[in-house]
Amino acid sequence: MSTETEGKKQSLSITDNRTGKSYEVPIADGTIRSTDLRKIRVDADDFGLMTYDPAFMNTAACRSAITYIDGDKGILRYRGYDIAELAEKSTYLEVAYLLLSGELPTQTQLDEFTRSVTLHTFVHENVKELMDGFRYDAHPMGMLIATVGALSTFYPEAKNIFDQPTRHLQIVRLLAKMPTIAAWSYRHSVGLRYIYPDNDLAYAGNFLSMMKRMAELSYKVNPILERALDILFILHADHEQNCSASAMRGVGSSQVDPYSAVAAAAAALYGPLHGGANEAVLRMLHQIGNVANVPAFIKEVKGGSGSRLMGFGHRVYKNYDPRAKVIKKLADEVFEVTGKNPLLDIALELERIALQDEYFVSRKLYPNVDFYSGLIYQAMGFPVDMFPVLFAIPRTVGWLAQWEEMLLDSEQKIARPRQIYTGKDLRSFVPMDKR
Image 1 (cartoon, rainbow, N blue to C red):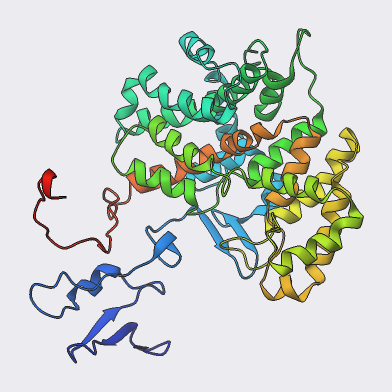
Image 2: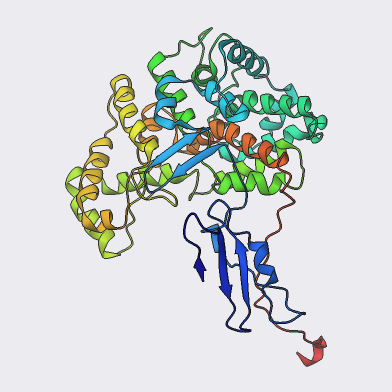
């Protein structure tokens, strides 16, 4: 195979050594269409050449204008805006508007969007009864997934996904109700009464109120913790074609309602390799136990004895995760209010040694967003079971932006990957007495 040099013909020349035939495949945006390979055949009965790519390591399934990642350079941008700048200067709902519309809102647009979300934070009373039906010790994330999926039965018009006003209303409803359902999932799991939304509070503050309010008439939100949670929501709002976004697009491609698709995306997020990764970091830090034990732990990781360095490395980042830089700074501000998490010193020493060790540097294993986020959540009083739920709240807007982009993309069809069949050839049925 060979490509024409830049400035010349943008195509790939392929010679099939099985037949001696040559083919020319167009290159666009540094990519070839896998369907163009179908013309490479041995004979007329041949299906045509396919590509084999387990876990989509090198396959682009869509064109997207939402999130840009350059893993080698440690770049993450939403609609062209650097993640660090958005975290510093923006709010979550402002970023949500950006992800959905493609542009930052004017003050009037943001006020109207915020008002719409605020007015839809309440859920139908039957939703409360539904959540009461879960076991007393049900995992909050399992409750969230089931309840979000059940919302499709409360809003049957949601299946009209190609009607723009109806679609927009469901998007607003999901953004508004996700914190309510999330907080109620937690309250149910610890046996506390549900707290209704307070429309006088901002998005993150309202969630904190529904989580933590007890007997007081109104919950006084600490502004530093509220802002910290808002920043964490910004950092987790979208991340390109990750597992849950792919689930959202894949399920959404069947043209199901957005509540069902979001439930599927949340189910993908539930897994320990996705939304549960920061929990694994905390388990690792607890396992290490003391700063003095860090060198021995590093030695075990390098020796392949079973210990794993959690919170380092990422499928797309081969540099320092830009979100981790923001979170590391944010941790100091949070700990000023909550007191320092005793695991922080272990984390800092682990990071210091790993970033100087050739074993990890050569493998481009740098801290990712999960390395510090769990420490912050724990310091703010969130139990470990709530970590994937805290991820799902802000990621909802990313899922919805990806879903809407997919719906309006004329090239997209129902997702249906090919397979390489490795089973038996045709066999005759064997009667029971001859098996």
